[in-house]
Image (tube, rainbow, N blue to C red):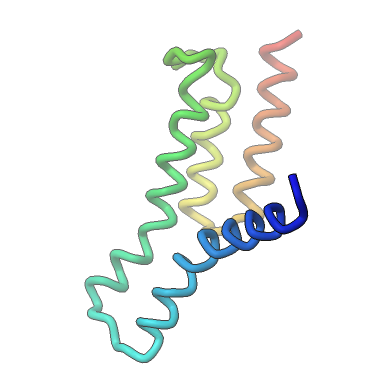
Length: 109
């Protein structure tokens, strides 16, 4: 592949990555959004994260894996509780790491 093709590919990828992020900012920065829209937009990251995490926690090998031997599912409950109560990303991550480590020590000899 020649240098021009590589450059145009990188430029195209940069545009499709950053343009969808910048356009709303540019178009909406000078406007006052309705309260209901602000509340709705505030919940979008949580909904997207939940949509990505649920399959990662409950599916293994292409099949549903809801069991007491599912380390990540067991760790998800206390991690969710800590996240909900403290609203701390750091606390949630540390809780998840500790619970996974403990569950692996107890369940996996």
